[in-house]
Length: 228
Image (cartoon, rainbow, N blue to C red):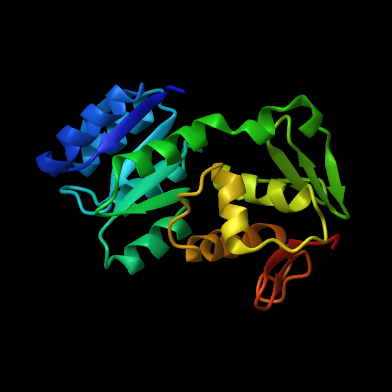
């Protein structure tokens, strides 16, 4: 499966071999070496996914993510340092869809990018019937949701997580299972990424995110979606 990727990293030792590997895997790849160039390319190019290093000159990857997410729903994958937990959390809170921790294998990144492009679950006709959970209505065909009739804007990953839960209301999903289903891969990285996406989802579909009534935590197990 191929797609058009914008790869932004200011380190030639990473950018050059990674762009070569992605092209060898069938992707069309454009490169940027600073945050301003990455943002400009992302806003004016037709990309299937954006890969951003967190640390770049002119604009950081998190700044690019924030500005891009305000104007586009294109999937974003962040590249972070091994000890960059704060950067990972901030990136996810700003709307990044996933992150990969350096050093990483090319196979891992390729797997995640292909999973983003695949989105098999949402391409199946039988999975496109509208789902109604009380005041929450989900239209898989249009990839849109409404809360009491008002449209709610989600990132692609937030929408996919919601669909995983909504297709099995009341069922408890472990964090790893949610991420595996969302990305269709066993390379799920840090399971805490799921918590960040759930936090963002609650801020959009719950009346009181600190006291959720729809998207519930099951201690020691995971999460479930109920009619609220």
